[in-house]
Image (cartoon, rainbow, N blue to C red; front, side, top):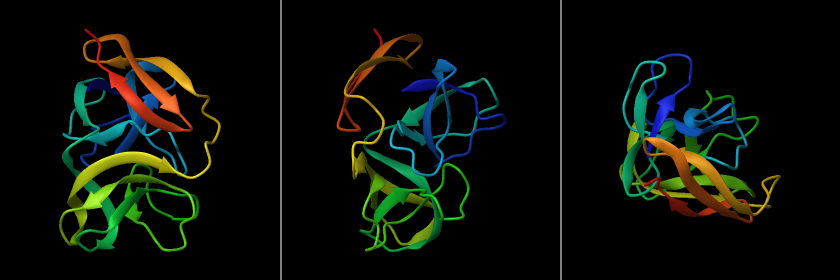
Length: 157
């Protein structure tokens, strides 16, 4: 999906993002414990420029610490002490977390991952339903949320 960069500077490749609550055609970096992550930044673009956000397939994801191939990669949680939009390897003690995907290689920093964006935990504060979002070049795309998980995405036509 193509969205406007509202991060305040150049977008950072591999960072997790959410829809900007002030502008449905734009994205901002996700905060710890967000359950509404819509994808991963695929290229560095200036503030207010359009940027492709990956939400399926494979993408480079910024993993803060070393990970090993086939590990589950999750978004930041409270207490991680890592930057907004960055990820970590899921620990055995993580009861609820936002799954970003599976590492396709060993390393840290930008790691190729098979994306599987899904929240694993309680449904949180997001009500079930279909929401209009800025997908594509106009703002009439939709996402459907069930139990805190995006279950369908319809790009604008």
